[in-house]
Length: 141
Image (cartoon, rainbow, N blue to C red; front, side, top):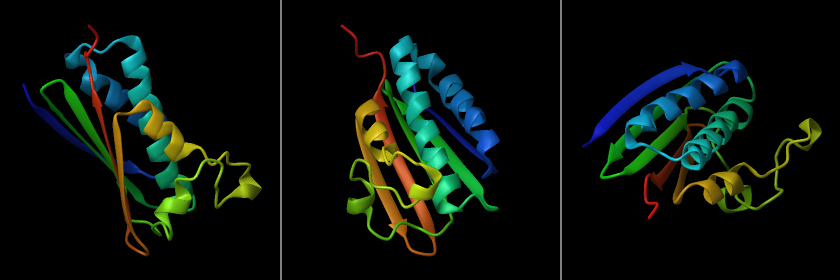
């Protein structure tokens, strides 16, 4: 069975929990374990937080979230139309942050990579960033 949703919401930190709930609700039909559900929620939290904090610098903007499920796999996409990432390779380095004054840990992409099966980042300066993640759900055996 396949399924698809699109949601958009203001780039406000209070909406991170909404994104988590949407992701958890979306994958519920795939019968995830508690660990799988938590992995997806944490990865979505990190992606949405990056869009708000780094993409829009906590300013105004819209976060676009899209999810697909197919054959027991979920693909989640989080997109912003903010400032973009200058150097994706550098941004993915553990502990690298562009906001040290805010005591950011610089582990967002590392967390996303560790909790999901795949992570792909597309970004253009001045145009925004799209983070696409996949995870196989229910592969326990």
